[in-house]
Every structure is written in C-alpha cells, then in structure tokens.
Amino acid sequence: MSLEKKRPFTVRIVENRKLSPSTYLIILERPNDFPDPYPGQFISVRVNDQTVPLLRRPFGIMDINSETMTILVKAVGPGSTILASKAAGEQVEMAGPLGGMPFSRPGGKDVVFVGGGTGLGPIIFCARSWKREATVGKMHLFIGAQTKEELLEGLYEKDFDQVYTATIDGSSGHKGNIVELLEEEIEKGGIPAAILYSCGPRPMIRALIDRVGPKFENHYTSLESVMACSLGACRGCTVPVIEDGEKTLRSVCMEGTVFRAEDIDWEEWE
Image 1 (cartoon, one colour):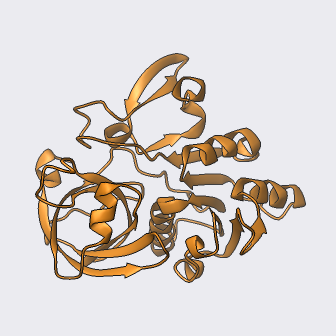
Image 2 (cartoon, helix red, strand yellow; image 1 turned 30 degrees about the vertical axis):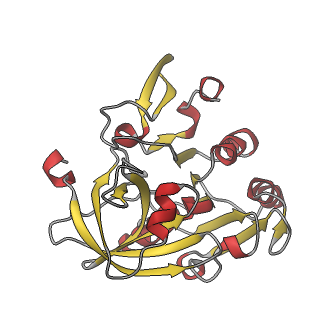
C-alpha cells in the first residue's frame, strides 16, 4: 500500500450515537478513493486543528461500506473526548487505512473471538467481513466489560453464532472476567474452535495466553498502543517480539496491529 493512499482525508461526521456512559459509535463519510481496509487495520483521526492534542489518535475500523465507515470511540483522554463530543455534520481529518499486518483469515474453521472495551470494533469487522466472504465456520464471541452498559448489547449479536458475556460487577452475564468464562466453557467441551482472535486491554491478552492459549491452533491478537505518527517513523509504539529465537522490536502501527500472541515477549513488554 503506497503512502499516497494513506494521505489525510477531510471527512464529515455522518452520525454520532452514544452507546453507553463513555462509548460512542461514530460514522464517518468514506472518501471516494479511500482503499478497502482489511480486518485489523485502523484509521488515525486529528480531532481538531489546535495544538492540543497535537497528534492524531488511532481508532480500529468496525465496519465500512461504499459510503461510510464506522468506529467505536471510548472517551478516556483529551483526544477521544473531543471526538466523542462532535456532532453530525462537523468535519475531522483522518488518514488510513493504516496497519501492515491484518488478521489472518480462518480458512473455513470455527473460531473464538474475545473482545474487551473498544477492541470489540475490530472483532466485529472480522466477523462481518469473513461472513460475507464465506471464509469462516462457526463464530463464538466472548465479550467482557465492567458493567452491563459497557457490554453494548444489541450492537453485535446478529454477527455471531453464539455470544457469551461477562461483567466484573455481575450486572449481566457471567460475574467475573471474560477469560474465566472462556476457560470454563472450554472445560465443558462446548467450544471446539480452532483459532482464537482477540483485541482489547493488554492484561486480557496476557491472561488468554496463559490460561487458554494451548487450547487453540493459533492465537492472533490486534494490539492497542499509544501511537504518535502511526506510520512507523517515530518507533513510539514498538513491542518486543521473538522471531526465530531472536529478540527484536516491531512497531504496532506498521508491522502490526496483528501479531501471533505467542511471538510477543511479554516479560520484556510488561
């Protein structure tokens, strides 16, 4: 993909819908020459023309069609809070699609998705893309949140064959974290899936590796990271990995966002 195709675009906000106390579904117009993204790729958005925040912020693509693209935004910092406050009709500058390594297609196999927070967005994009392509078998979604409101129920159920939910406060689904629930379901023998795909907070990904990783043929994870340039130049989002027995650094923005989970050197990263 050429740098020309990643040039900034000025786009209009088509819709901004509040889904929970802190999470927003934002639909942007798609420029005519915006390339088709792959699941796991993202866009970076400059939320205003002020010096604070100076840099664009990365957001995973949740869906796209010929006219619009959709992202999930959780208002947690200055950039995401400003974007979440914008109304339909306002314009923002964005670049993309970014990311050098998308999710690997499942090749018709049954799969498990695990999403936490706005990591749900890229997971939904995978499910919708692969269902259209008929390249996936049965799809199980495990989604965890702090509360029932943050589960964003009603947004994704039709995209998956079976959905399992967990909340830390016990207000909906399993009480506890989503990794515990997945482990329990595997022990019951009800999850004969081959490949695990995940996106969410770093502790959730690490827990998946430690507790259920060996149960799957492969585990691909899309990493969330603080990014500056989003083009691999600043090396501010590097993650330590082990390749062919050698330790090296890979940038999440250009050499990810997707990695084989077992290749990440977690002892060095934490």
